[in-house]
Amino acid sequence: MHPIIVVAASSGSLTPLKQIVSSLPRSCRASLFIALHADPNQRILPALLSALTDASVLHAENATRIEPGHVYVAPPDHHMRLEEGRIRLDQEPKVNFARPAADPLFISAAETYRERVVGIVLSGYGNDGAEGLRIIKEHGGSALVQDLDDAKVPEMPYAALNADHPDAFLTAERLAERIAALCA
Image (cartoon, rainbow, N blue to C red; front, side):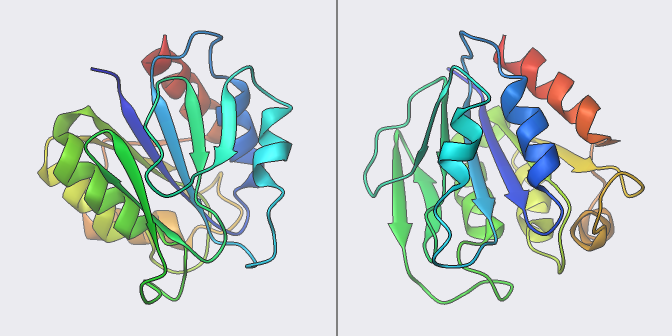
């Protein structure tokens, strides 16, 4: 069973996202899911990240089968949730003032994949990802947070710290190294 890596990203997180995706080994056995707070018209992230890796990077589609070595980006204005072997998209109300939001992704991943989940909260405004990261830990998964001094906007990492005790606070470079090791 391959690792499930879920990422909360917002303002100031593009550089860490690029570092994480560019560090993925050629034969990555994990699946990576990104919930980025973005303008509903912005659809460029998969193309931007694809240029940095051999992994397949794409906007998730409803009922897409989850495959190892793939990076799935929540499409604008849709929450992405995980169920056994599949991705589900919806336009339910915003969570933490965002759609896509990380908490629906994190919570569904934790409930479905339990200890196989690694949650990561990157730079951003607000508290999205904090509750989901707490639930990931509650279900036996791992919680990683971008170091407060490394995050351009430390509100989301700080909220994650206040919600629970993350396993580690790491710079973007160290997060990339940790994810690369999980994928190998």
